[in-house]
Length: 633
Image (tube, rainbow, N blue to C red; front, side, top):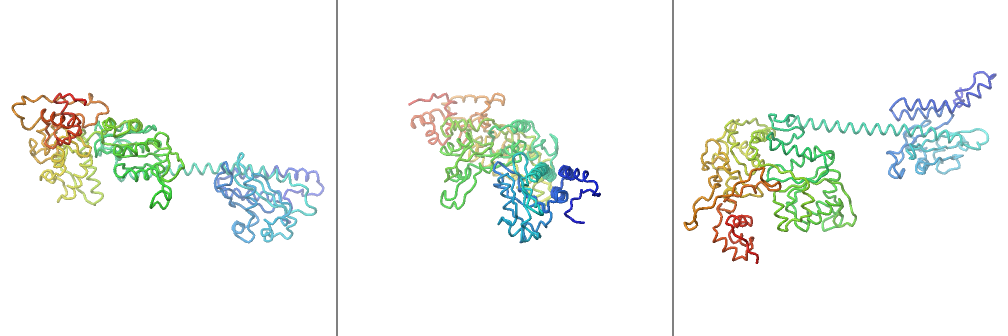
């Protein structure tokens, strides 16, 4: 049987009417068969080959090819999406891509970019088809025409559909009907391709979500995290990295849940070692930006020049050693969250540069004049009293209001003693996992830890557990294994000898006056913990009376309750007792000495503080305590 004979011909020559009717309905039957194929399966490559086979069989289009762009068309079709052959009949796909008779892809690319059909009446008349025609297997290439139409989805081209028509006798006057028919087929193919791509994109999204959830589940399984508030490990729902079951931490995490859903800037405040970065990560993890980057920068660790390059990036040749361009942290965090730790340490000059990018979301790299725009949520952290810095002119007020939209104050560890035990167990479990040990904590060891003030907060507790776990001889850690039982707690010595019994070290506040001593210690003379070794008896007033001429000492003003404290008051501002101005001795200067120092320095508190060996804050408190009016010179 001749392969070129149409399959739908009349079996009997005596029925010309039936033959004419069937031949005239071939395009409609072909479209019907193609529509069934396109809706039958989601295997796109096989579907497209079946469509070409139907065109070849029903309409005698001898060699068909479909080429698609590698990604969906955009407003500039074909610019970043080169064509690639995906289906062909009458030739192998490998030969059409690389062989000597390779398919003339430049002709199809012209159709794809212009979104207009192409007709070549004779292959032999076009130089683009010379090599292809010589190896096409056709004996008379001057009797073969090439028709190519764009595959469209709406107004955008997704690829091309091309066929070859071989004709006998005189050349046809027009191929308009064939081009119109192929355009209809191209539109059907375009809708199918677009549907397949949408399904594939949704599948990739679902797989990425499933992989992320599986990774999170594996991480939770490794950390042994529970899911209920008040569980044995002290973790709270949705915050598996944060250990804490007390009311203070629950209140903070409740604020985190409300803040995370917004785009507002957040200021995380608290003493050193309270876990400000961990809270910042928690805000990011439960926010709509959780699938975007979380980038951290320690502002205190870099000078201004390096900090500017670190945050904004630089172009090649911006400075000596800039051998290539580099993205800054703002660009890295685009769409996500940028955490600026120790933001109170940046200089006034850099504060102005930072303010612009926070207000406008725009910046320029070092050595570049191109303005870049980013969408970044800012979370800042500090243990400094920024209000005092603004009042002294050390911190810009406009930057302060920009970063201090929502404030989260983290409680020190001494204000949440119920979290000491779960934290200690968490750090010990992590030590055991990292070192292959199986250590445990005795009940008396936990009693000892509960009595410590931990001026270094969670960081100090972690170091304490790591130290004792490293040095312990047995499998159970007892109270006698801690350094404080051997008068070897260096943290408490630092607190007592460097800054005095109630002064902050590195932004820390004072331990709570009258903190309970661990069992086995007495009165503040025992070596049990920081609150004991710092001399809690001195917190109640001066250790020794002054000269007889001074008369009775004035009573110290009452310590405000948490409800009476101003919202922006730092924790170390809540205990204005006599020791707050005592320098290394923990005692205020007497009235006469203070007035003499102020007179000598022209009533400049900073100079008087240096003369007395105090801080300006201590001098200010001493002036208020003695009721001395400040003279304005």
